[in-house]
Amino acid sequence: MKELVRLDNLWKVYPIGVDGVIALADINMSIHQGEYVAIMGPSGSGKSTMLNILGCLDRPTSGQYWLGGENAAVMSDSELSEVRNLRIGFVFQSFNLIPQLSLVENIEVPLFYQGVPRHHRHPRSRKLAQMVGLGDRLSHKPTELSGGQRQRVAVARALANDPLILLADEPTGNLDSRTSAEIMVLFDQLNRRGRTIILVTHEEDVAAHAHRVIRLRDGRIASDEFTDGRALA
Image 1 (cartoon, one colour):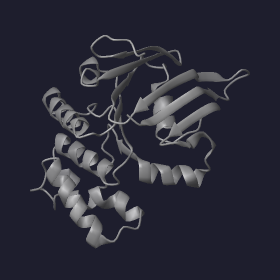
Image 2 (image 1 turned 180 degrees about the vertical axis):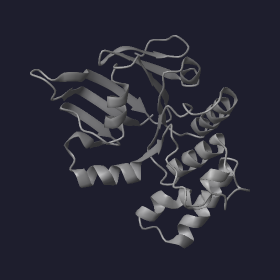
Image 3 (image 1 turned 120 degrees about the vertical axis):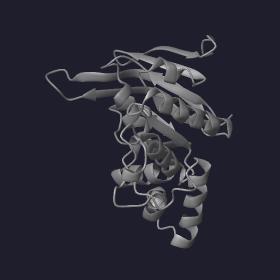
Image 4 (image 1 turned 60 degrees about the vertical axis):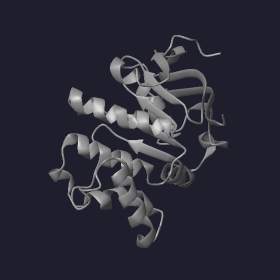
C-alpha cells in the first residue's frame, strides 16, 4: 500500500532551561494507506507533541515529516495551513463544533474555508451526515445533540475535505462507555472503507480497535506492534 506518513530521525526539543526539554527523540516510523494506528503512552511520553507534528500544528526541531510525499517539516506557516485544510481531518475530544451553526453547517465549515460553492458543499455535507447516522438531524444545533451525536458530527466534518489521514485525539474522552463503543464502531467502519486512521489515546479498549499500536515512552518509540502480537517488520 502507498506510504502516507513517514517520520525520519525526527526530534522535537522545546527551548526550556539550559539544555531544553526533549519531547520526541529520534523517531522513525511510517504509516501506509488504509492503516488503523493507535498511539499510546503515559503522560509526558510525547503523544501530544507527536499529534501536533502529525497534524501540521507544529514543526520538528530536526528530522523530516513526509505527508503524502511532501516534507511538511520545511513548509512555511501558510503551506502548513493549506495542508491542514486539504490533507488532514481532525477529530477532537471536545468536538470543537460552532454552537451557532446547524449540524449540516458545521460539517460544511472546512469546505467553506476552501471556497467550495454552497451548491457543492451542501449536498456533500448532507451525505456525510447521513453516513454517520444523523440524516434526520440536519437543522439541529450542537446544544440539541447528545455527546455521541456531536462527536459523529465532528467525524463527518473531518471527512468533508476527503483527507489523506484522519487524526483523532482522545475521540472518546468526553463520552460514556456505551457511546464510546458506538463511536469506535464508526471508526471501524470508516477504516473498512479504506480510511487511514491515526488515533491518540490512553485507553486500552480504544486502542484495541486499531490494527497497530505504537507505544511511546520518554519521547521514544518503546514498541510498535500489530494488535495480534506481531512485531512490525
